[in-house]
Amino acid sequence: MLFLTVMDMVQVRWCEKHGPFRGDTCPICGEEGTFILNDWELVALSRMLTGILRHFPEKFGVRLDEHGWANLYDIVKGIKRRHRRFRWLKIKHIEAIVLTDEKGRYQLDMENKRIRATYGHSIKVDLSDLPTEGVPDILYYPTTQEELEFIQEMGLKPGDRKWVHLSKTYEDAYIAGRHRVEDPVILEINAKNAIENGNPIYVSSPKVFISNEIPPQFIKVAEKRELELPPEELEKIEEEKRRREKKLERERERMKKYGEEEE
Image 1 (tube, rainbow, N blue to C red):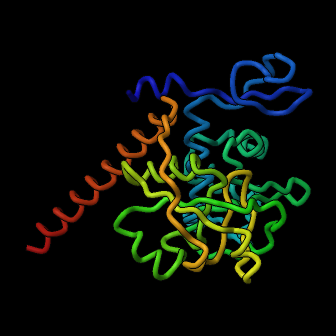
Image 2 (cartoon, one colour; image 1 turned 135 degrees about the vertical axis):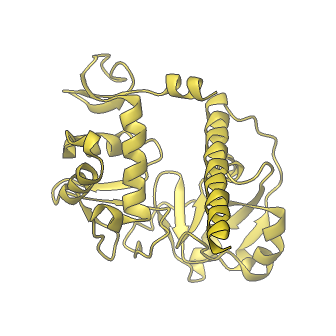
Image 3 (cartoon, helix red, strand yellow; image 1 turned 30 degrees about the horizontal axis):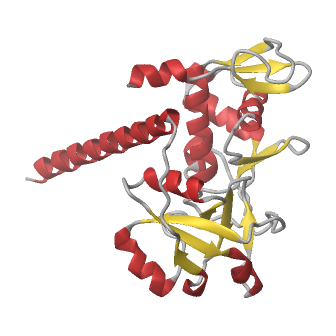
């Protein structure tokens, strides 16, 4: 399974006419373009970039401002200093990753040479300067059967992540939920009424919206739909499950070692 995952990954190339793209040829003009990153480099750098902008900027010597913006030069220097194998890294590589990111996780300001993640933070950032126009009337949120009663009573509030993350479609929410549990419960959010009653919702990406909280009166359980996920999405879910299991195993080993040292 891991072999197939790696083989299915794509490289990043740069078309002189249309900018960066992922794949073998430019999807607009069909030109091969110039090589930028191979599949392994793309995955490794994407994970580091996500970590810096959402969770642990200090590990790479990067500082975020109150709205989550980081200097691109600082990110490049931080990655090169921490991982010598990327000593060739330049801003253009970060730019290519961001401009070809299908999830729209980042906001890039090349004029001021800065970047930020627009959702998914576990550290406190003020994202209230994101746009509020164009929020759909109905949004969706995945949860578990165990969490449902609490949400119906208290509403949606930030947990490990500092904002409540809402999905544009039922399918998007279901996919997000499957990364946590086998059979997620999908909630339907009356975003229109929530906004009208003083609960702003911000546009983080084409498919993700965030809010400080959603009161329970704007939440109901969505009618269940049968969905068949594409094989590539199922593989992503399995890969994340394997990473979580490995992380738990490392934590168990660490605790076991700690216990033996205590004895």
